[in-house]
Image (tube, rainbow, N blue to C red; front, side, top):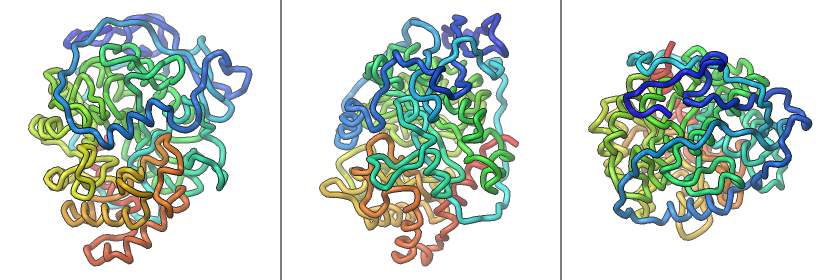
Length: 454
């Protein structure tokens, strides 16, 4: 395993360099998508949220920060994981004979990006700032299937197309504290660098497999973004890492960027070795500050959702780059949790010309009852009055593994997104200067245009 400052080993015998691992363990290609290629011996978690994630999400919504420190990195424990799930349905299959398909660059191969936002022709489609597509897939959801009206879940690739979601920030989300034998997005603890790396790499390879199958198009450049916005082909997915533990050191950022990573949130609620989280106090660690420098060198966009207050402040002190909150609501309306962003943080994102996405998870909209579309409007209008109507949009987290029962009553699928526009108009969003196209896609697209390479 490469340590900070030691560079990224290139495995001899791996086509185009493969993973930035010092070991040459073959990794799965997700080819063929047939039942015969599926490893049925590996357990598959239910299609809805794991019990561990559900408890951690609820805890994250309620938690007060407690002091902690990020642990030092530990030694390596193995190579990439094999595949399981329904390959035929857009789950994960396994072919150990395959190899990775991207060049592992040198740690200094990325130069800072400086881009000008270009004018776009707006069409009535959606750009969603936060969808846990790969997490749902590797834990067993049939991501190619339509979603019946009576299904307990809300999101698949098919439902994205049905709801005219042409662009989305698709996450690589890994779970600290889970059982990797039961939850394929899990790793043991913050010392388990190799477990986190394997779990993250598995999800990255799922996105690559879906791209080869024509189900999605990974957005790596402004040209890719424009094609997705025009509806040319499959939905465009901008890869966002939600908690950066799968990146074992700052030296690996360039490799992940070469594979398509474009947005990073350094922490989830539990924190990471780089930064404190909303349920775990602490700012940026020393390695976290070097990590920010590596992200900036590659032009990777910063996502502040889930950062602790101290980590948020440290991030802004460490970089002058643009910052978004991909799926965060107003702390002023739900004051009991650090999971939400304060008015001061909203203003700071405005000053960085960033963007804030409305999270549709019910407990992040209304704490003591079932959320409604009126709660969605209240959070959006509160944020928009501070950040501006041109810096708000949808970061739905739909359905994040938690199921329809935790969504607002009136917004149960991507097909219901248009109801948000109607409700915002009724509440005076246009009077503040907002537009339907802006909230639906143009505001987020402007930020992505500004940071993506040509």
